[in-house]
Picture 1 (cartoon, rainbow, N blue to C red):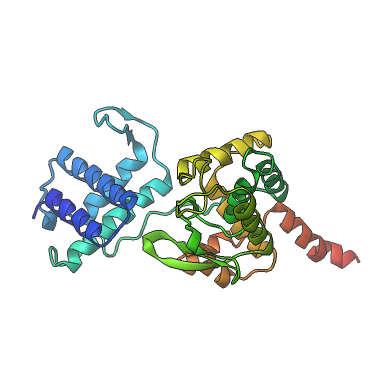
Picture 2 (picture 1 turned 30 degrees about the horizontal axis):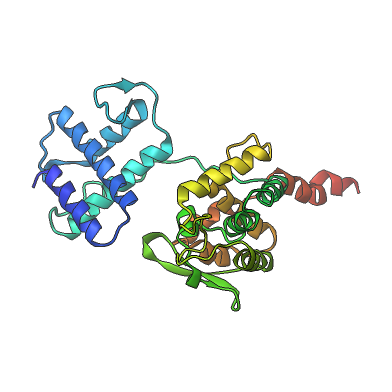
Length: 309
């Protein structure tokens, strides 16, 4: 079987399994780029002839050049980031692993290949003062109660943008103190509501949300569901009004929620469930101390300071 046919069948199989359109596009994009790479090299497209060396050469080329979207013949010399190269590897790894499981090949050519390294960076998060400014600005908009609910669900519950926009009225259980969230891969989870967040939701429902047949919790003045783009624009505007110089976007509030939860004494296992992470390793990215935390801890544990005392 040729690689292009294998890629088409893989995409069809993933679609049948309910994989999100965004993930399907990701698989298709990297598969197509690898196919183009093989064709440019005059490589035999029969999948049994593809080796780990071919994949290594493809990944190495990604580090050295970048092809503009829609212009395969125009190339810049700006290398792709380690995270992007790692993403290309993971997409191809999933494809070849599926081909092995479906018996199209005896073994994935990259079964023993280690993933390209990526730098370990601290997830970007807002400081407590920045977060306070954003929440304050949310209370000054033309929809203050709704917009503060948005801030609370992002910065307190750590919801993803799509999860927030898709939240329905019957997903909110105020008496029991939790919301039902549909996460990645159509995986449902229950997320506790803090007291402040619960109060904001009650105020929004009683005082500001228009009468509408819409199922979604967050709606516009016309009673239509508030889109992901609308929420993203709102967060960006709140950042500008608060005078924040750093980039302001919804997922940064999810990072902030995770960091503050741990900072306030929450444990990483509970955080894993709240965020909907499949592995603890994904959650452990948030287990770090910022400079203020380090200085506070160091002040009481400094070896020389304690020696002199």
